[in-house]
Each structure stands twice: as structure tokens, then as C-alpha cells.
Length: 434
Ligand code: SF4
Ligand code: SF4
Ligand code: SF4
Image 1 (cartoon, rainbow, N blue to C red):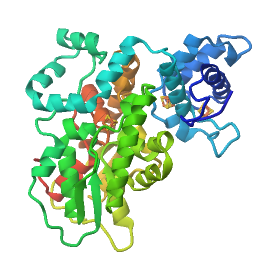
Image 2 (image 1 turned 135 degrees about the vertical axis):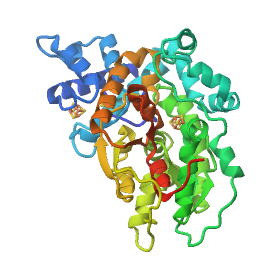
Image 3 (image 1 turned 180 degrees about the vertical axis):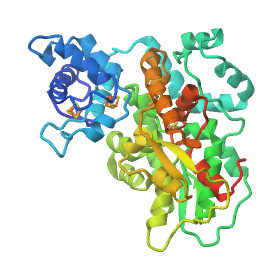
Image 4 (image 1 turned 180 degrees about the horizontal axis):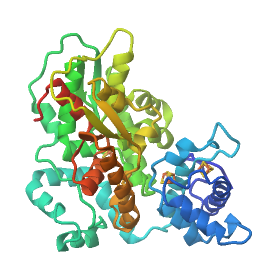
């Protein structure tokens, strides 16, 4: 049994080695039990082990081991809270990365159903889907926006594996990068920084308004914006489905292009938490080398960059807010931002407007695209419902969250529109919505 999280390690995809490592880690977690509240993976695991009088994790069947893996949606919260992580403990336990290894092993050893592969290919080809869907937005949105549970949605579920019960985010008529290239150029007075926007598929095809406001807020604060040398998908849907071959191909191309962007003197800003995490952390693991390191060091979450500017010597943000400022803002903190270990920068940014922030830390159960897969809907929807309840309980005048997919879950569960924090800041400056 090898303890490794390195995808290039010769034993990384070895089935016996991975299953033995699962037994070791499952046993340690069963003894610890700290993470029972984050997801169903842990309670499922503890139940399986408790079925045996001697509580031997080695007695779990392959199907039972796999169920624990299937229920993990890569929120990373167990890693953040674990006292036994590599570098801190001889146990070297990184539960989410072990789940990624197990997924990759099953994928490499043909233990993934054809239906799962089809769903991954539909969900993973975000650029192809986005390009077609933005060109045919009225028709596409009619289909995708059909009532959850309706005949149309059931037909989509049967053919693609995308849950017919979830509310899906609609596509925009104009892509973010098209808007960016056509917009009138602004002369920046005192330049405080230079960034390249890596828009992410969600902002590029579905929520370009977040990108518009990002650029306008940045430019108002003297930050020159350009587009990153690549605006292609980061590859997360493949990574989170165990298809590390497809992921690594995308990652290698992106690392080369993004390193080029950085060498031109830009930092990279990412307005979506999952994609930011992939650029900062996963590219290091799966591509590695000096270029991946350079990209990781120069990649910032969109709010993280602004707060860095505000706190740095010699630069600061404009704190004159003459627009609409809500009295209270409910802010949902996405798991993949918490996993970046950067603090709550969007909260800090919105606080500058003078609004009172009410935090909601409950997971949305979407995490990347796990919650949109038909087979996960039954587990994911109740998690989203809990989030909805907490949003309603917090009762802020405006609801916000950085993750567009989690915002979709909030909308699905509460009927309220959840905005990206930069959209609230833009309105507070008096910048109108496009
Ligand atoms: S991941 Fe770490 S903290 Fe969580 S149950 Fe396992 S050992 Fe405990
Ligand atoms: S990463 Fe999240 S979903 Fe996966 S096991 Fe850890 S807490 Fe559960
Ligand atoms: S993780 Fe980000 S860049 Fe990757 S597919 Fe999703 S939105 Fe696109």
C-alpha cells in the first residue's frame, strides 16, 4: 500500500494499492469521526464499518468502498478540518485527494459505467456546449428551462444524465469575451495593477454580467484588464469524474498559455471558486513544474485580488460608494473558496460599502457539477434545501455568493436571486447593470 497523492506515481492507479489505502484511511476516519457532519460519505462509511462487530474497515466490500467514493462531491471541507494531513501528521491523510485517486483508478480500470462516461462527456465539454448554446440561447433556454420533472427535462436526463429535477442556469445571448472585445476602451489614470481575466465557462457562457461588473470595478480602481491567453475550460468536470487523462491534456495546454499571460506582466483573476482552486492547486499536482508554479503564484480569486490591492503599501480601493447599498447582505461562502485558505475576501470587500454582512457557510451540494448529475440529485437536493433554509433564516436584504452554481441552488430552493459579490460592489459604486 502506497500513500501517494501524486498522479504521476507508478502506483497511483493500481487497484490493489488504492483499495488497501482506502481501507487504511477509512479505518483512521472511523476512529476519528470528526467529519460526520460535512456530507453523507462519512456517515455512510461509519455505518458500513459499524455493521461488523470487530469494526474492521478491511471487511468493507468493493461496492461499499465505492459508495463512499461516489458520495464525495469534493467540497474539501474534511481536508480543511483534518488534523492528520500530510506535512502535519505521520498519517498523511488527505481524504478528498484520496477520493480523486480512487475515482481515477476506477476510470482507468473500466469500473465506470457507460452512462457515467456519457454524462462526463456532456458536462465536461463546457466550451462546445457553451458556444452552441449562446448562439441558440432562446431555444436552448426553453429546453433547459423547462419545468423540473417535465417530459422535456426527463428526456434530457435520459439522454445526457443531467438531472431532470434541478433548476439549470440559463445561457446568455452574448459571451463575456465577445463583450470584452467590443466594449469601448477606457483610459486608466493612475494604474494600480494589471490583470488578465480567466472568465471560467460559467461567466463566459452563462453569467457574463459578473464579468462586466468585474472589469468595471477593477478599472474604476485603476486596474488594467485584459483577457488571459486561454479562456478555455479549466478541466474540472473531467478531474472530478476521474478522467485524469482528459483533465491533464486540458491542464497542460492551459498552464502553458497562462504562464505566458503571467510573463507578459499580468496577474490572473478568476471569478469562480472551483476554477480558481483548479488553477491554484490542481494544476500543481497534475502538471507541476515551473510554469504551473508561476500560474499558481499569480492566480487570485476576483475579490482576493481587490482586497490585496486595498491592503498593500501604496495602493488602495476607492471607498466612495454613491450607489445602491443594501443595509444587510447575506453572503454564502462557497466550499471551494474556503478550501483556497485565503480568508473571506468577498465579505471584506462588501463590508467596505458599509453594509452589514450575514454569513451562511452551509454547502450547496452542487460542488462543481456533482449535484447536477441525475444519480446524485437525491443526495444533493436535501443539502441545497438546508442551504435555502439558512439563507431564509439569515434574511439579508440582498443575497450573494461567489459560486454561480451554488447561486442556482439558492434560487432553486428560495426563489431569491443570489448575486456575485462584485455585482453588489458595482451597484454600490453606482455602476449600472448592462
Ligand atoms: S478526514 Fe481527518 S478529520 Fe475527517 S474523519 Fe478523517 S481523520 Fe478525522
Ligand atoms: S471532500 Fe467534502 S464531500 Fe468529499 S468526503 Fe470530504 S467533506 Fe465529504
Ligand atoms: S470548473 Fe470552471 S472553467 Fe471548468 S468547466 Fe466549470 S466553470 Fe468552466
